[in-house]
Structures are given as C-alpha cells and as structure tokens.
View 1 (tube, helix red, strand yellow):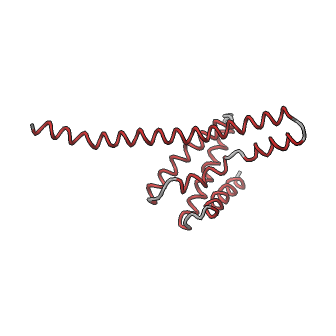
View 2 (cartoon, rainbow, N blue to C red; view 1 turned 120 degrees about the vertical axis):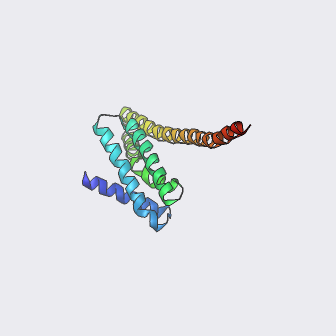
View 3 (tube, rainbow, N blue to C red; view 1 turned 135 degrees about the vertical axis):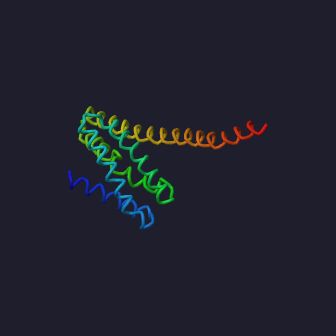
Length: 156
C-alpha cells in the first residue's frame, strides 16, 4: 500500500508539472493526489462500489483543495486537477477496450458500464461542489446583509 501511496503522490506531482502549475504548489498537488487515492482505497476496502468510492474521494478532495486554496490564496482547480487523476477510470477503459478487441463483449460491457458509473460519479461530485458553493455564498451574503437591516430597524 505504501508503494501505491507513493506513486499516487508522484502522479499528482507529475500532473502539476504537466499542467505547468507553479513549483511552490507541486508537493501540495502530489499530496492531494495521494489523499484522493487513499480515501478511494479505504472506501473500496469498506466494500463500497468503485463509483461510490470515487464520489466520496472526490468530495473529500474538493474539501481539501478548498482548504488549500484558501491557505495559499489560489484557485482550488490548482489542487483539484492533479488530485483527481488517481481516481480517473483509465484502467477500466483499458479493460473495456481490451475485452472488446478479444471479442469478450459481456465482460467489455461490464467494464464499460463501471467506467461510465465512475465518470458519472466524478461529474456528480463536481456538480455537488458547485451547488454547495453557491448555497454557502448566498448564505454568506445574507448573513452580511442582516446586521445592516437590524441596525436600520433599531435606529428608527
């Protein structure tokens, strides 16, 4: 497991270098990739499906990258993109097309369906992130406006 953690860290760092992210953030990008893979691994060991494990790992990645973005004062995408790479269903897609070429259509259909579920879970995770961000931003605006209304009512 330590070897897999190491290589997920390396993958996060490599994606950060590939996307030309500033060198100051490379290690944090590797850490986000390692965290995402670790959460995914723990969830699969707890008998969650690959899609559900990917969704949980992505939601925790989004939370972690949001914290890092506030700390370093950069966009959260800097940490999201390298962090998501370890859970992208590339292996499932390889198995799908490998079985298609070997004419094992039922197995290929199974792997293809799993890849679609994992990809859909990743997309749903980003949609949930966007919805929660909008709700929290609206709540923050409402909280900031409320004291002004109360002061206005008290002075009348």
